[in-house]
Amino acid sequence: MRDTLVLNASFEPLSTVTLNRAVVLVLQDKAVVEQAHPGLRVRAATVVLPVPRVIRLCRYVRVPFRRQAPWSRRGVLIRDQHRCAYCGRRATTVDHVVPRSRGGADSWLNTVASCAEDNHRKADRTPEQAGMPLLKEPFVPSPADAMLLSLRAGERTELPGWLAAVQPAA
Figure 1 (spheres, rainbow, N blue to C red):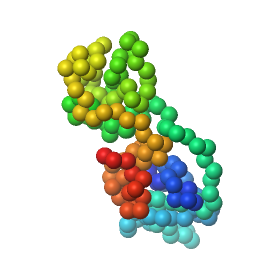
Figure 2: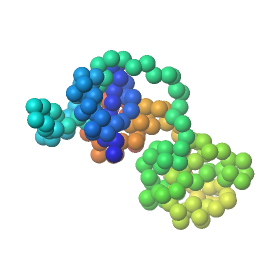
Figure 3: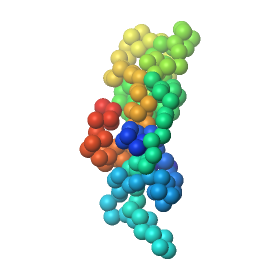
């Protein structure tokens, strides 16, 4: 489970890591805890450390520029917060707005999260032909947005206020 946000030395979001990896980075003095879970501690024989929610690297890591996050089915479900684009119920599948059989691509703007019933009902048609309007238009998340969206909803709401400017709109 990835539940610790890693920030670059410049405070830009880089990734999420497991609790174990975050603790190792802090103990090796490669990162500092920016925000901790209140009241939770990691205890060892000689060390007591707050359980990190957000850590920041001590040295700047150069990251190759990436304009958009790579497309994936899991990424579409996360972007749409596992909500069906047609009815709003829990989504378990990915639907192509323009079906692949009609030239639709696997892309951020052509795929939406969908429940199995609506995906089956829409079948090989566009939303207009099926009479199923989209509740939300698909969008291309930035890499930082995609990474923040991958955090569980409860973890996103508990992020520090200064990171709110980077958080994607719900």
